[in-house]
Image (cartoon, rainbow, N blue to C red; front, side):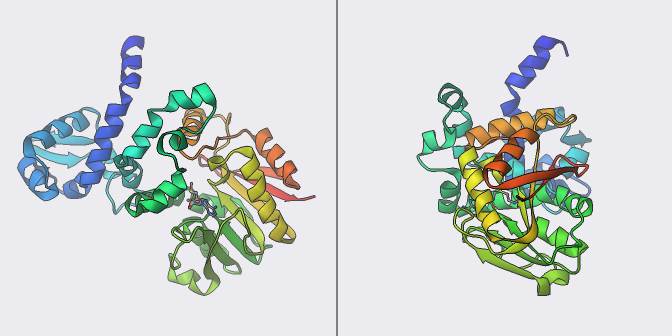
Length: 328
Ligand SMILES: C[S@@+](CC[C@H](N)C(=O)[O-])C[C@H]1O[C@@H](n2cnc3c(N)ncnc32)[C@H](O)[C@@H]1O
């Protein structure tokens, strides 16, 4: 492709996002798993208009998500990633595009750039968390997406940090507890608590092996968190502006046991190899929750403002780093 064609593909990239979201919503990759299906079989299985489904599939075959041979449609390796039953499934991420509020917020990116304000709240009058609390179907998709995305990095985080000196960790804003599960499975001496809002927090451990060392607490990290030797704070600070991040870190610092650590796990801006993902995640934070991605120096400044000190940054070999902070 020449520059003009490449740019045109970028400008119209939202069409691919929309088509993938519909494929995920209809469960097309689940239906095609195995030997595949003809268009008529697939339309019956996913309850779609046959002719229109054919048009959707033509587009997704063209971008390599599905394949067709002798009138039988199958998943390519990319299409397989949209199945519900694969570890780290990307289906929930694609399904997030089924919430019209998401498109409306991104449609107001210009408002954010003009004013510095959060687009989602400007358009919808509530923040993303309140919006999802009021719409359990989208809340469930968001939680599934966080679980799937965190599945990719959970084990790497558990392998990259030495938790052997800690007795108790709290996964702050831990959602369904996928990261906590990876850490508790790796370190058998650890007690773990998943902490999140009442309508989000996990209702049980993900694996029986950790059940006796696992508990859940509902609450707000702007008010209080359970005491711990270590706080896991993954993909939380990037949701919030600086003053709210300092509040979250202060809440944790206030309950941290002596000698404890605060482990912030985030994409870090300007790291080689992750520039595009981090930069566009930063725009997503601007538009959706009203936060931002940050550089290492910016995280160090947040810790200092909360009475903590950035001790080390650990590369996990994935898109996220562990930023270890200590008191004093
Ligand atoms: C981007 S998700 C990250 C989830 C999880 N840490 C992960 O990485 O998979 C942000 C989480 O913060 C939680 N959250 C938002 N506001 C909160 C609050 N005031 N107190 C506790 N949790 C909150 C959300 O419910 C959500 O689970």
